[in-house]
Image (cartoon, rainbow, N blue to C red; front, top):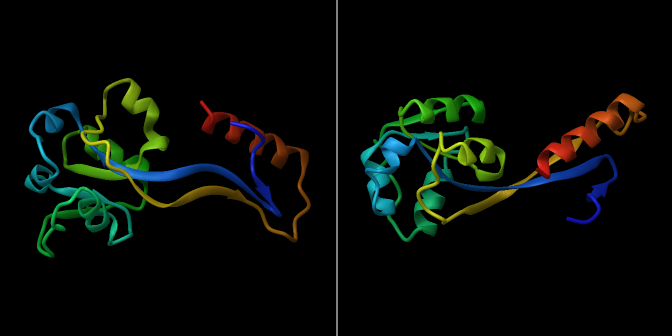
Length: 144
């Protein structure tokens, strides 16, 4: 709530609290955080996401030989998770629409904080009305 945080040419959008997200079918087969390791793990380019989450959940990290699929897009990763390919670790706030429609489930409340999302623009560019409108639209979307 409150005024959006703006710093120079950056505007805060949302936190990136990460948690495992998966299909309801896979979630029904998971009782404890350790059960996650029965499935392929889906992640972004950051190698440490799963190890950090497992540590926060009080579990051992995945073995170096665990089946891991790396995605350069969270949207594509969540499509794979919806299809039952494996368990994704992703920013929960980015996928509230999938969680509310129950296409995706967050099996555990444990979340890790790996930073935030910000909207930025080049300092050398003067803000145009179109840029301002886009920023207002994006901030509005993030607050829903």
